[in-house]
Structures are given as C-alpha cells and as structure tokens.
Length: 215
Image (cartoon, rainbow, N blue to C red; front, top):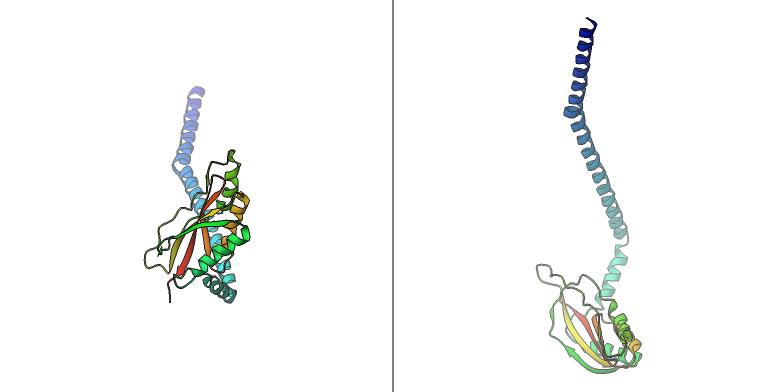
C-alpha cells in the first residue's frame, strides 16, 4: 500500500516537474527573449536620441553664430577665383620659389575640368619630399599617394578645378618640402595633391587651383 502511494506521489512529482519545465520552455523563455530584444531596441533608440540631441545642439550653436559662419564662408570664397585667369597662380608659384630658394624648371597647366571631391587631403606630400632623400643613394624617388577622388554629385558643379604640375630644381629636400607647404599661403587657394622628389634634385609637385562658376 505504501509502495503504491509512493509511486503515485513520485508520478505526481514528475508530472509537476514536467509541467514546470514545459511552462519555462514554452512561456518563460520566449518572454525573456522578447524582453531582451525590447531592451536592446530601447537602448538603440536611446543612443540614437542622444546622437540627434547632439546634432540639434550643434546646429543650434551654429545658428547662433550664423553671421560669423557667413563671414568666414565669404572669406574662403574670395580665395577661389570666379574666372580661369591664372596670372595670380603663377605669381604664387614664383613667390613660393623665391621664399624657399628653389628654381622653377617648368609649369604645366591642364584645361579646367569639373571639380571632383577628394576623400582625403594629401598632407604627406611635403613630408615625402624629405623622406625620399633618406632612402640611401639619393636616386630613389618618393611619391605621396594622391587622394582618392570620389564621384561628383549629380547636377551641375558650382566649382571647377585646374590641375597644375610644377617641376622645380633643388638639391635640398627640406627646401622642396617647404616649397610645397608655401604654395598654400594664398591669397588664392591652391591645394597640393601630390609630390615626388626624384634623384635628389627634381621635385614634381601637383596642385589644384579652383574656379568658382556661380554668378
């Protein structure tokens, strides 16, 4: 009799455990998983809101100083000519050569073309002119990697560019580096995009001059 009761109690216990396990597997776990998903989504939304709040704050701050921004923009626009006249470019090149004590060998100017935005600015051009001389025998060339262009946006561009290639003679790699740096002094905007120092005596610098096309 006692054995029968024990078997019945054991069977009841097993049944209760089975029901509890089934409840956990079928109800609790899916609810827990769903709650975790909702928590993750809530955190993502909160982080996105923080980003938006930061952007709104930045835009609000910029709006408060819109007059200053407009003035800076006007100043920058004055560094971009509204006509393809390049006399001032040659003046800048000659002035840079005089200040850095290098001798201009040739200047080649390409035809104006639509502006192509570049993803990076080649700041290594001047540094490479110095580094090239440390290769050993002075006969190797160092070349800065040109900035990768990215496709221009659809629609007419409000800016054009002129590629100018300058060859200068100097046996001083530091003077070559200073020449590239000096090209950016203005008042017209010139952007060095490449520099190659060959044989310890010839620097080939490639720069962009910009032309504003809007009225």
